[in-house]
Length: 277
Ligand code: GLU
Image (cartoon, rainbow, N blue to C red):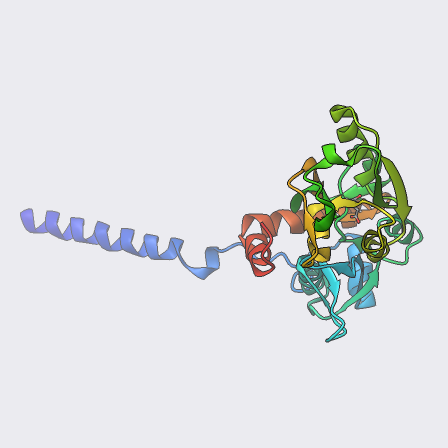
């Protein structure tokens, strides 16, 4: 009787061990969901990109760490460039199948609307009024607005810029952000608007504006031995990937991608690669 009991117990143990091994086996893992490898029906807009064999992305060409056209290599580089390559890999199955179009704060929405690009990944701040015009993914980065000045002028903060002129980019959130902050401080500032950041930088050097204001990450690309970013940091804002308002299928796909790279640590790796916080 005792022998039978021991035999029965041993059998139960062996069966449970097999069950456990079975749970950890490959057969139980969820199938890959990438468009390039899956047979699942794709949203027609995503399928169209896959069929075309190219993903068209609007990016910055003058923002180090985010989107920069490296003059030495002739290649785009930065966090937003890598995100575009990863999306091409996911949709088309080839990370190199991306066509980059340089955009500015002023041009990016129009390029999206007229179908010249599939999406914008270009330090594009998510704002309520913009959400009425375009779809934005969940945020992948948060930044705030700052001020770049020539050190020799001795400015220590926005409060010192009473009556001065600030250079901002057309179509950017900077002007409203600085105005709100100036109102809070009870000072008056004037603005000159430019199409591109290099133009504002040149105007600052030439003394045509007293400060250059935009997101602090964008300003970082224009610091040199004679200038500095002031400690002021206001109007925190989130960057999202934008798609055409009617293209909700692509918007969902892109949003899933953003949440995927946030969840699996890939976004943190990219941020670290470019020394972004
Ligand atoms: N991120 C800000 C915006 O979307 C600054 C402008 C820019 O991205 O160039 O308005």
